[in-house]
Every structure is written in C-alpha cells, then in structure tokens.
Image (cartoon, rainbow, N blue to C red):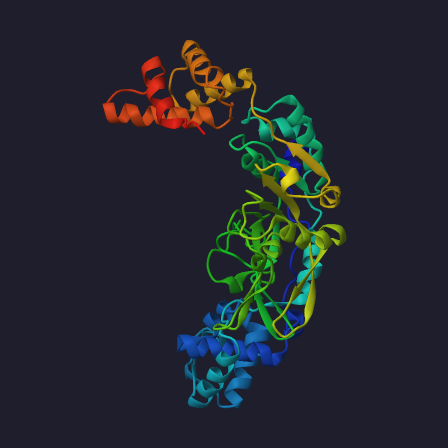
Length: 437
C-alpha cells in the first residue's frame, strides 16, 4: 500500500472509551433511571437486553443497577425470567412507574440513545478537528480530474483546499462552483469520525446525529458484530460517520444557525454548523437567502476568528461550541453587492470560477458525449458555437454541454431515434434551451 492510500484510508484519530460502570457514562444514576423508565412506558414489556440496546448503554454495570433501583421503588417488576441470566429477564412498568414516566415525558419526550455529557462532546470534536488529508498537485488532479477547469482556477483551489480555511467561490452561474466545493470536501475529508447521537447540558438534550446529513460507515471496532449494539466494545452512544459535508441554499435563515428547541417534544436539534463540525459547511447560492447577506455574514465573524461559536438555551444560558468547520461560501452574485472589505479580509481564499474557454467548452462536450454514449461531432459543435454563442453574444457556461445533450436525448426519445449530434437536433435543442434575457 502506498503512502497516499494509507493517508486516504487512515482510521479515526480519536475513538470513544469503553463503559464499565455508570461513572464511565458521565451521567447521573437518576438520568439513566428516568430514560429506562420512559423506554418501558412507551414500549411495554421488554427484556433487560432490549432496554439496554434501546438506550445504547451496557446492561451489566449501568442498566442492571437502574432496573434494580426501579424494582425496589416498585416502578417496574419482573414478569419472566429468561435462561440467559438477568439480561434476559422481562421487565414491565407498574402503575406507579407509569405515573412517574408521564411526569418525565412532560419535561422531555426524548427516548433513544443516551446522550453524552457536553464536556465529552467538546473534547471529542477538539481531538478530531484537524485530522484531514494534505493536498498536493497529484491529489488535486485525482480529485478534480473529472472537471474541466482553467489552469488559473485550478492553481488557486489547491492552496485553498490545503489550508482548511474559509473559502469564497464566486462567478457566473452554471460553471461548477457547487461541484468544486463538494470535490474539495471529498478530497480533504477522506477519513471518518465519531459523533454522539445526542448531548446533555444542564439537563437539556441536544440531538446531534442527523439521518439526512450524516453518512454512516462501518465501525472498525464492531469486528463483524451485526446484531445487538450491546456487543460493541466501545461506547455505543457514539456513531461512526463519514466526515460531514453539509450544504444549505436559499432556505437558510438565521434561526437555522441557532439551537432549535421543539416546544412539544422539549429537546433541541443542533444547528447546521454544529452538525458540520469536523467537516465542511457549504452555503450555496449565497445572497439568495431570506435574510440580508450582511446579517448572515455578521453571524460568522466571531466563529471564523475564534474557532468557536456561542449558542443559547431557552433557559437563557449561553454555551460555547467548537467551530471546527471548513466553511465555503458560493455565489453567482457580484461580491461587491454582498460583502464589505472587513468581511472579505476574514475569508482566507477568494476564488473566481470563470466561464470555460472555447477549448474548455469543447473538452466538456467530448466528456459528456462519452458518458452518454453519443458520438462527438466537432463540426456540429463548431456550428453550435458560431450560431448560438458568437452570433447571439451568448456566454459560455460549463453546464451547457450537459444540458444541451439532455435536450437532444429528450427530442430523440420523442422521435423514436438514437440521440446524435447533427445540425437539426442541435437547432431544436438550442431553440428550446436558450432564452433571450
């Protein structure tokens, strides 16, 4: 195995510890007991092993003492004794336990993997924040080889990606800014990391794991275990994921950057930048959000300078969160209309993604044709450039070859013929695609 491949497939720099006792969880006995009681209230008669798996804590040393306490307090009872020891006993909540569970659910309806203490989350993020692949011209060509970029643009992307600092991508629409940003993320965030399902701070629960934005990867510590989480050696409250690349667009609001408190379920959802910790946060179509660009930018000044963010609980307490994020802004609006000099100074790398040259346009067309199994015809492309770009003063865009071939495919499907490049199909496709603005 080469040194490059060893770097690419490097294991996580930090991993959770092993839980032997309640003390190892960082949670209080009452917190675990309350969580166990809510599980029994919502799911009925369960074995001790199923209860332990429901909250991702080991039965021995943590859940077993909690069930013993609840049994002594007459909040649950044993309804069946299994042959595999106490973990196989079946537990049922009592009337007294139900009353207590309803009180607990009034405070928060959260039932699931037990949270980790806030301090443990901060430590884990700090230890995992800088673990990324170094970039050089060789890795750049491997990662961006599928894109046709002007050499001047390519030369700027490499140092920006290698720095891990904030990046501002700007330029006309349709030239691949989003694709470039995603390629940067996939290039430098090759390894994996651990995040908790949820965290606990001041008795409040913040859900961190997001099924949409976080991609699960096999945990190297599972060693083939495909069944109950109780068989894991490491703390199962932590989940193994690919370093996140979270993208938001015009739907982003200032509220999306704050803790989202659910007044019905009474727990929090982590904001986008917290979910992106350890990875990349891409703000696409910057300037088209429902809030003023200046307000959105001002929200980032402190996190970008201090590498930490401040979030507010509904109780009024402010908590400091690591800002271990590669933040990328992407816009097709003129920078002068969006930002001032003070903010641009705080962004390390400003890269204009320019339109392709005529040679670059032809190369993109060749690659798209090859991927679609459509024979490339140079004469037809020359005709397209002359008639629809030069004569009409139409700007070249990197996305046009793909879109025009999509139009040709649609027309060919309708006519019941094989898609091909000729003047007749190009005219129909171009007339349907280009709009005189």
